[in-house]
Length: 309
Ligand SMILES: [Zn+2]
Image (cartoon, rainbow, N blue to C red; front, side):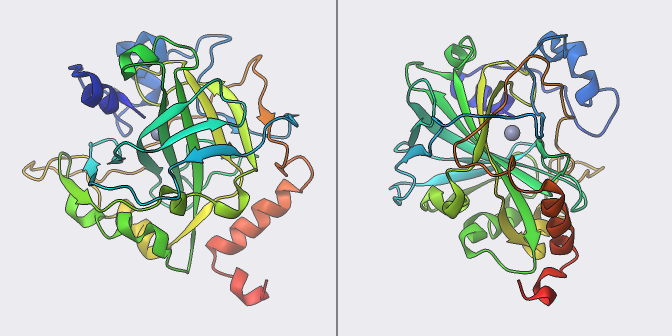
């Protein structure tokens, strides 16, 4: 998830010898080069399946998303890092509240996606895997840099947002999807005019989320992340989804053998003794997840509009 963020922010030079599509370097082999990626017993790794074994926590209200509704000045940057597409955002946004132990400043967001609509998200919701997942990465403000935050068990707060695919174009997602062709190859960048980051969140369902302690989902898999995974996905169109699946490469433009980047998600890890909390207004405990799965299936088959719901 954030290896290159480490490099960018801290000038750390790390060998990028991990991948998703080759058994010599895929997520099951990451521990060979990054011992902290070994899912040892009782370790706190991510992602996890969010199931019915949740603990309702009435004190978990909506997070304070400071600056998310504003249009920041300056310029953002979209980057193809070979392992994901990352949007580096400038200063001015921070998250707090919702049970987080402090203020966390927002530094970047990035995406995980599948090769087909039935895979792609890192977390699963009652074993349902969405086509995509967005991670908004925030560093605890008491830390001068990410290196320092990685030494703190609660050094990072990541907001996870499931992304579903429908027949409707998502105009709020357009600033990203329209820029993807400019970052088709690893190393390419594209300036992005800032926009209110709240546009990318499930704005009507921000009080519904799950909270647990876990890890980075890429090497070095540091167990320093307070996860907030929103229950309700945002929707993008098939065309917008396809720009990720068919248009982003893990390789550089001048390489002979081009490799499409997709299925860049880590496998599910056990929760072991961890408590996974549901926010005060989360609904998974009361709603039927099987209905959720059913409607998801209708959605991806584009049958939902036919039911006039
Ligand atoms: Zn991630």
